[in-house]
Image 1 (tube, rainbow, N blue to C red):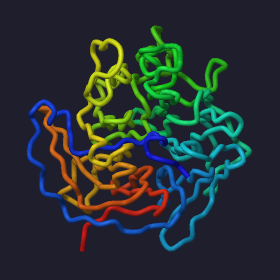
Image 2 (cartoon, rainbow, N blue to C red):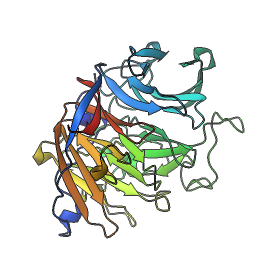
Image 3 (spheres, rainbow, N blue to C red):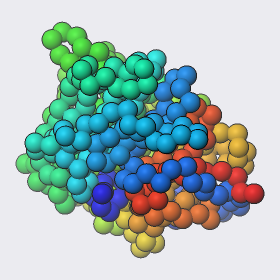
Image 4 (spheres, rainbow, N blue to C red):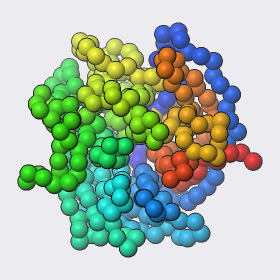
Length: 382
């Protein structure tokens, strides 16, 4: 199973925010009355996705299988890539996403041969992924077995986004690009969020969108956001399209950055020149985007697990709040980043160990995936 959230690439968001660092934080808001409702006792869940017009929730397990969860039915395997997957430590089946029309399933896993990142596509028909349609979309060599990233998601623009860590190793200094490292180098896909159209074109297995920031040169054309250490989880706000990236930190800070749609393309989040909002290595980079939420390892955090901005209806007092946790700390928290940059935070009074990921259903309700406890749903307390 996945080790520490930091190894996995998760991020912890503690009680210290960027706004607090600059003296503009507002008092914490009263927390809504919420509870965690067990859904499934699956072992080793790492990601969850939903499919258009389908009531099932699809959950990836680290060992290399994808299962469908439906009410009053046993989990049903819809894809098994365990023979292709290296599942140990921070490696394994790490992400999944359905195409917007629900006809294709995409998975992100660590290859059995060398632990490389593999992005694959499968046709999804009759309630299962068809192994005969397996198509490799992208392969990225991984120099070390940690900081592999893991998130896979289609954005509001219909393009596919993939998170990749910096390749592992302390300080992101082992790639020959020090002090910038992979996170700051635009000549590698490591330490980035990528944006592609997975449709083949021009002899390639995918297409680079014309409006990607480096589509015309200056860097790898797949790159959308740079300066990341291990963007284990990111998500899109289904109302505004904002991109929320939770980046696992070094040994002091964890961070979350919100990027508006008009500010995301080409954004540099600073690693390894910054760790959290603190200067780290080398010279600063003009235009670095600072995180809005920063948490401290001094509070028991070690690897942040980013979630979603809550847009459901079951918990009205939580609407518009970003929900997240930390793999080590386990406390479930929420934050609201206001237009003036101030951040309000809530401790939701819940704790769950080894949370690897969050899920969001068609109604905007949230789920937490624990490597040890399985899948649980965030619900109003009764």
